[in-house]
Image 1 (spheres, rainbow, N blue to C red):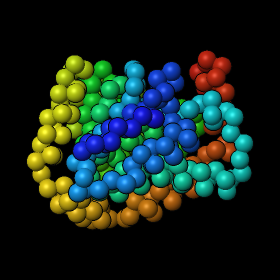
Image 2: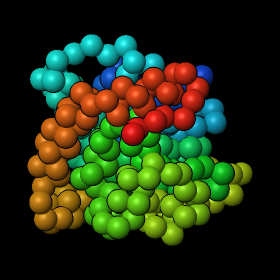
Image 3: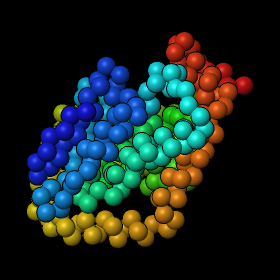
Length: 253
């Protein structure tokens, strides 16, 4: 992960060979990169990806090699993927997702969790955890129903299908889909606007908005980690990982 710090902290997923797949190490790096933000010195954070993808979600090779107890899995999910969600939701400055390519699984969650998200028109979005027999994590079940509604969340989570950036904008997963060549200009325009606003006031406003969402997202992350732990032990997860590695369609029957 590459981090440039200044008035705007730029965080870039830099594993293009794996389409910026999310591993425990990447999640920890992202959490660390989100630390130390101060409204007095930072205007915003921009999260983006290197190469053709924003983030393709969980690293399937890492899933295949995983060997842990249920308790270890629960603790890991909360520490890493739950920690990613928490770091974005608690960041005291606006977090902007610059979605340069496909945002799948945890990648889509990060876009939904961000305060602003702009995507290249060529990008696709999906909560595709079900395709490898897993429950949506990284804050997906905590934030997506609040952002796009219950029915659309179930559509994405139950089918695992991908939707284009234009549909993601229509559904409010992101703020806007823009021509690929205009993505930097659109993000820079927002950053210019935010630079003119009182960042410390925005920090308080963000805390107020998140505090009034009803059930706390902490509770949502705890429940999410619980069900994800159960999913790790299912035949569906084993079949999903095996099918992916063998280059075939999974058979969940």
